[in-house]
Length: 341
Image 1 (tube, rainbow, N blue to C red):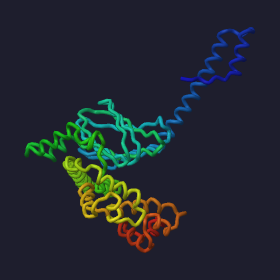
Image 2 (image 1 turned 30 degrees about the horizontal axis):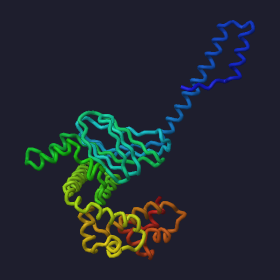
Image 3 (image 1 turned 45 degrees about the vertical axis):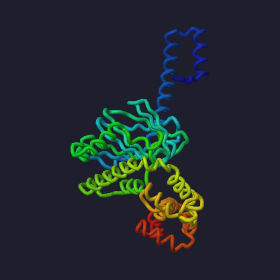
């Protein structure tokens, strides 16, 4: 540990040592300086850690005997700051990465992953473990951690029922749902996004919340199993759905249609619609609408931007069309939501 001395005071004490001061007095005064230095250093470190903790938000959204859901959001821009995720003994851990460039290092297997935004993993932990998560580009670290007890999954799947169920559970235990293509963690589908959003926004408690959470987890597992079951089919044309989605992600603010995407990729528009729906379980139009509404909701909190400007930014030529779509999605008009913020 580096120690910062008060050199003027230190030199004064050294000069005293050449006079008639007793060595015991000199040693005592030096110890006082050291003590004050250590206290100052400790206080500085304590303040720094306090600031880090104040920028870290860990919210327990749901806890039961079998399921635990935690939303983690770390706002600290210090690259040395790391978030610690606990994995329980004999538990399945479903982790959705909600920010970009997340590094994850598991202490149990000494493995490090780098995730893009909207990727996820389903990891089985046979014993209690700790994983470190951090970002390197001063991004906000956001992820949703769903932990499910082994026995709950065992009872849910019931591997004794048939061979297919037994294979699913075996694949889960051996962590075969971590990589989709060539050691690439799978991307969240649009439907997964919607379920995660519903979990984050659900406000009821008690038995209603328990039933809701369990239903959503079952649906997430179904989507994961379907995604990996389609793996072999998608490997024949692995780039087509991703190219479609990439084009939409970059151009959803414009009035794009399947015909334009078809010309860009060089494929029939009907095939494009079919490929996209098979991969992401939603239509192109619905996916574009979801992206626009998510952006609109983010911009609506900024009262310096006019609602008409937000409509144009989100790809709506006419304000009334934007207002109608916004109200259909969120149940209130843009003006009402802005007023209540």
